Length: 125
Picture 1 (cartoon, rainbow, N blue to C red):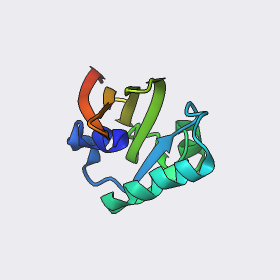
Picture 2 (cartoon, rainbow, N blue to C red):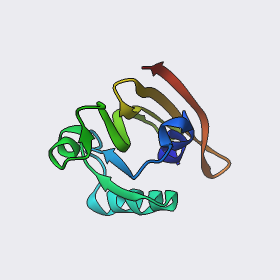
Picture 3 (cartoon, rainbow, N blue to C red):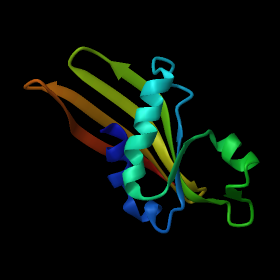
Picture 4 (spheres, one colour):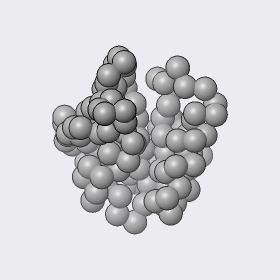
């Protein structure tokens, strides 16, 4: 749910994207099965989905140094705050040096279900 919220913020960054990469290096509490479920879920956007950091994308040739941009989007999780009733995820959605947003998503446990209750831009570049 949180990554779906990331994808709906500043949808212009999604324009003609060829992939979605997720940097989950800060999600130490997730096991490989959970990570695979997240990646599989995001395949609904019709593009290749992978777990990579910016540095890994650059090494694989997915970053164009002339345009200083990716051919897709990189979703990064920078901080998580977890309780029994809410999860707050802070991160970013990156396409280029001039096309990036900071994002804060709040997912709350309401009436027996987890729901995104807030998804806001925290910074823009």
